[in-house]
Length: 243
Length: 310
Image (cartoon, rainbow over all chains, first blue to last red; front, side):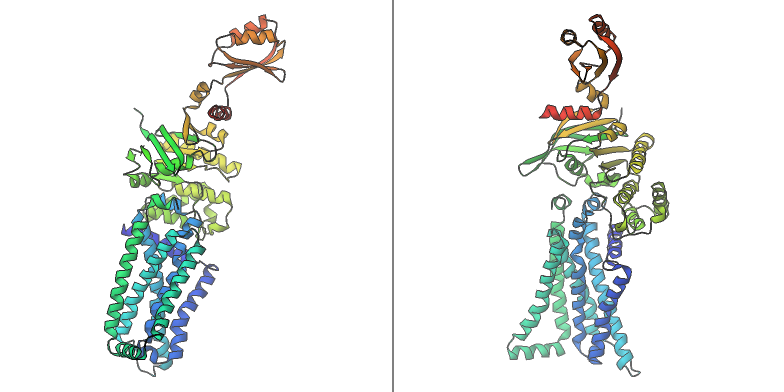
């Protein structure tokens, strides 16, 4: 089972790499994706990038990157007529599903960690002045854990949407809407809070960040498990072939 | 006793009100090429999907390589190779990576995988182009690669849905030879669907004809010709009068006699000795120049079966 999951991940990563504009286009895309959170934002923020919880925004990189690729997983296979041959192979339903989820989540998580590392190098190079600057432990661990869970969330949701969508375009549109809601609801929601609540939230962020990270992680774990279970229930060969 | 590779018992599949496969009963012997023939929409692809366990039967059952399609489909897919309606290749990957992926799926060891990939790509004339992205290839080349993928893990049964579609004549002949060799030398069973009746005639030891989900005939080509009552004699000459035709039609071995384009055509009830009939028409005044006795082609049998069903 594990070997089969890795086989699917191997194929998915091979497919992601030259997705747009061949290998060179893919490399340029990767540079942009890592360059913005890894170079541009840290240069703009300065030492604040590592001295405040702001670097937590890197978790969104996971969401955005997974959203980019996950819509393609099943809808793409169906559109390109590769799904039936894959389903006719000896791979189990779960190996295919976990392989797809793992590949997408691993891709988003990997890019986030790369951005995180490059950001650290950038800040130290530009603002270190001989001093080693590091993310606060809770922020560093928070990014690592929350970005993995966020990648799992986006991957699980994307797989479910992709399973139901008849075309890649349809899946991408749904994923984009979901991502916008996920990005804007917290921003607008926080903006609409009464001033007293905002002050309390700011205080919690500075004093109870660990608690917030743990609560966020717990919520994401529940959501990830729920989505994975839903995807497992939906992923049935005999049903997929009819879609 | 010869082993049975595929056995279906009253296999039926409905899609809403449409019955795609209707009470299908077939037995395919192991190690032969079985041709599954039928017009578009007859239920051929649905049958393959049922046999691979990709669809559940509405009723009835099927066994493939001794495994139940409903409860042991994983075992069937482990042992079978599939060349389906579409090549099913990853067009953004190279030819080698496509085979590498399926080699890993079938748990071929690295060295075994490399040897097998080289062997198949060389045999199909694709080795030099193995690093190319498949999306840039012609339909025929993709089909060859799909054939390589289906054979990669030495399956004991191959489902081939229109395998020579899109291949040039030389490649099509080569593929037919490969399939025939697999069956004859390696004992691989080939379940072949095709519209190309000449291909089926060359390749298949056993044929099933399906129409609107129902099996209308099954057996060897000779059996089908016999059941279709189509052994035929064509006589070139003169003196094919109405009296001669009446005389012929009165004979027990004659199913029909007619004159078309100045030639006398006699449909026989069975494959019989025609010397007596020739003697009879000569004594009735017919001057015979040439006699051709032939079996009906599979195409004629197929068309006759389709007509019968209408």
